[in-house]
Length: 232
Image 1 (cartoon, helix red, strand yellow):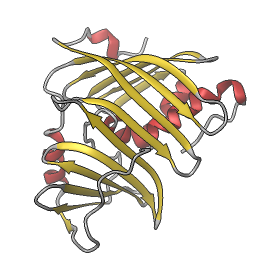
Image 2 (cartoon, one colour):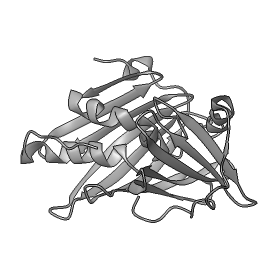
Image 3 (cartoon, helix red, strand yellow):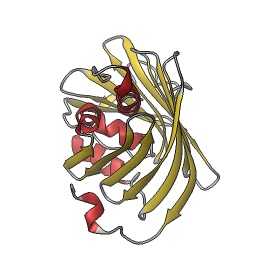
Image 4 (cartoon, helix red, strand yellow):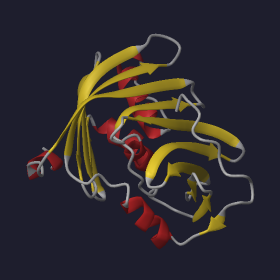
């Protein structure tokens, strides 16, 4: 993960990108015992991931808090989710102003452009903050472990980063990311009685960055206008 190198004025934007790109402040459910994972095909993983896709378009209003141990930064924003594969995030970032990130299928754009450049290497973990499982852009191997209560997916990407997703049934509970034997990030999700995500808590263990996103409201309905997914 990287933060902006342009100085303190752009730091909140870089921090937001960093927090979105890794995944959590509370521990996720414990991983399955070593040796319990078995290789599975990408097709099987893709089918399981599709079952976590939201059933209908949704508009979320959010609050977020970023803390690197120096000066906490807070803000508000909105998220549009449209199945099967479109997400738009609009947030207010102190000092910098407005920031927008759009993921639509294999395409992506942002304003300012630095946001997309920092987030895209870990776009699957952006989706995970909203309870949606997406495979990394490059997948070297996929493994699965199951118990009566939990299912774990362990995905190794082309750079050797291992992401472990913890689920109960088809509900994502949390995730961890590791490079070798060293954990680099975690994600934990809180849900309401309907199963909807109401809080995502992340931590970047490499840079001691903590990020919390709370969902204040959620409205479901029909498809969004097509122009909101297009680069202006």
